[in-house]
Image 1 (cartoon, rainbow, N blue to C red):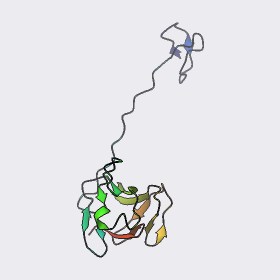
Image 2: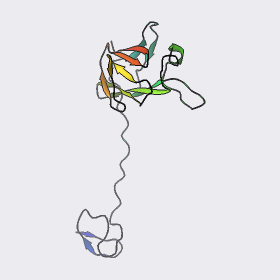
Image 3: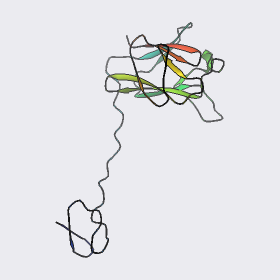
Image 4: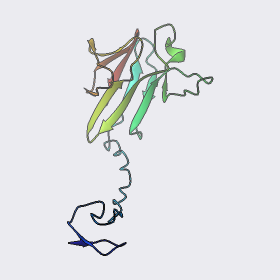
Length: 149
């Protein structure tokens, strides 16, 4: 039994409030947020812009936003495709994100206007899709290759 700190009445374990007086029996434990895991050691993931070969190193990051910079809206993506045909190619300001879960790299469409494709398969917004070395990623009409080796 759990004694009420306000009135001393016995209550069943697990109850949040006293049956006799309504006082709170115990504060719920504070659970600190769990930080995302670090990227796998020894793998330097990167996105390579097709045609130009420009590389965006994703190493050391658990998550990277892909899109177009827009200082007015306060959007500064980790992978800014503005100078790589992003605006003309239909890349949204907050188009997609790449993240790591354990040893698996994932890409997720952030409800972009012109969609995200992996190997010509359209992604559903908000649903992370696994990435592997050599996968073609298309954001609007801008094509990238995901590389880990």
